[in-house]
Amino acid sequence: MAKKKEVSVARERLSPERVLRAALALADEGGVEALSMRKLGQVLGVEAMSLYKHLPNKDAILDGVLDLVVAEIDLPVPGQDWKEAMRRRARSAREVFIRHPWAMALMESRTQPGLASLRYYDAVIGCLRRAGFSIVMAAHAFAVLDSFIYGFALQEQKMSFEGAAELGDVAVDLQAQMQSAGHDLPYLGELIVEHALKPGYAFANEFEFGLELILDGLERARDAEGQAA
Amino acid sequence: MAKKKEVSVARERLSPERVLRAALALADEGGVEALSMRKLGQVLGVEAMSLYKHLPNKDAILDGVLDLVVAEIDLPVPGQDWKEAMRRRARSAREVFIRHPWAMALMESRTQPGLASLRYYDAVIGCLRRAGFSIVMAAHAFAVLDSFIYGFALQEQKMSFEGAAELGDVAVDLQAQMQSAGHDLPYLGELIVEHALKPGYAFANEFEFGLELILDGLERARDAEGQAA
DNA sequence: ACCTGAACACCGTTCAAGT
DNA sequence: ACCTGAACACCGTTCAAGT
Image (cartoon, rainbow over all chains, first blue to last red; front, side, top):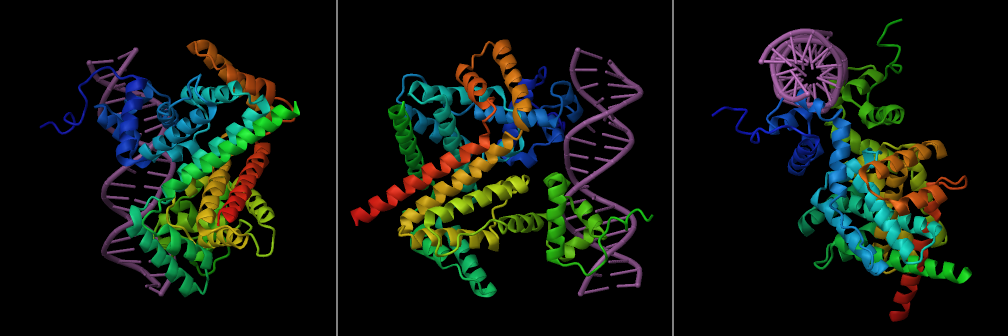
């Protein structure tokens, strides 16, 4: 019935890896704000201050946890068609950020890329280079694709009301805002009522449209580059 | 020489607007982490607890401040060519997030859109609709453009080392990581050394490439839609 | 009606002390 | 070498009290 020990994992030597895995689990349960040094210590059966023997500070823990998340993204493997490879890694990245929604906030605040991020960059650039993209065009492609992927994940999270019920509430709120403030939002209203609230619609579907648009544009740009040479 | 009053603004009645403007200024000076109820009170010459008479809690302040930032984005005005209008608002949005870099973090955490956000959505969708985009295609276009804009702003912030000096440091770190861990990052190394470190390169330049790629793709999609009808 | 002071339940981190 | 306890300087928020 000991109050502290029952939460703790069977006591074994602490290590940076064990701390980071516990931090990841904690964030998955309660978001980044649940990830405090004190709670992390508690989960590991240790005082918060002991963690500083294994990792320099909380920033290092956040960096490490983000790298664990990035490591979950499927990398393009050599030999695959470049478009299919980019599709797969884009979808995989999106899934990872749905699985760990709190990680988007870390993407924004952390500036030190970890090893997993570097490997991810390398794999993507490599895939493009082997498909005939020049260095300059590969840099272009990387920037536009990754911007789209992260930006989409960010927006998708903001719109994470569960289905039409809550979207309906938003529409009602919106209607109220329009009326009360004397502001008119006709186009937004139309789009919500006539499209977004309809049964078949899900914002998630917009992902594939944007992805194909960008991949087609990149293919065209690469081919134009080839002809110019 | 009074220690508290010299910081405070000339005392006038508090209002939600005055609180939000002060919060914006505070965030611009020291980032979101500098924006605490206590410091905000101090700047306004008032105890932190008084703020609760004007705004329900800190979340409301964050929502309000984000809406002030979004309100700074130039909206497309009717009558402009749609592509030029989208270019202008995309560039404007990017500039706003460079001016208020801390605001990207709020974009991620806040889910209640304010009036400025709603107006922004309405103006963008309206511009597309008037240019002949169907409702469905306007929703597609909105999703891909905004994902790109926000995602680019997010990445740009992560890469905000001032010029080649710091990028060089990153390259050195990277080299070290590659050697020490026995990991090879040939494509990333090549791209950094042969392209990103060269004098003319700036990640910011990638914005225009991505923007034009997406706008061209959208034009094509709209035209194809018109032909199908 | 508006503002304050003290308090509560939290943070990350330092540092001397324990084993 | 590793972990702890107490402490410091912070948080957001509540609540009774002052004017």
